[in-house]
Image (cartoon, rainbow, N blue to C red):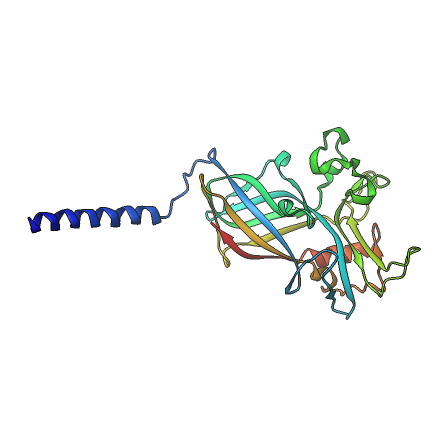
Length: 273
């Protein structure tokens, strides 16, 4: 009788072992590009080694100027991913325009549909491409709808173009406005012009995922690529930006310097698979 119990126990243990192994086993992608799943990309805004806190956090740039940030929005568009075989997938344009808003936590998680696969790099545009910028306004819906106006919106009606990156805040080194507030404003755009060449601040960003963890996109689970977005790099770059010298920058030549700086603010922290 003891032998029978021993055999039953052994079989039960073996079955449990193999069941556990099968659960832990990595699921390979189907290889069928028609099988799509959701991939999440998180844009976690920070300032150096500190979390960005609108209106309350105080930060210092490379030239020693203290500042607070009250407003931060930027466009993430034209998303592409490349798998471990070197095959690139481009998210359809009608599903590839997002507006990241620091005041809206949900907007910081960009979600796209991609084929199952192991993705080793991510590419996107910070800004809005020229073709979209000049297409029929009636076709621009959602985050591309230009009806938001200048106060909260991301569109220059007078310049027929989107503001790709908008950051506003306060600093004692900025000149006082009529209300006595010391505000700075950086509204950066410019798609290259319609009838004549103008400033082009469209930035294509590619992020390598191999060091901090590739994204394993599978049906039934959602991989999340966690990016850190260090806005301090907008000030501290190849050319350091002084708030005292440049308290307001919009459609001007110096906007290209700011755009060059902020194009370096994205780093891959980790991937949750």
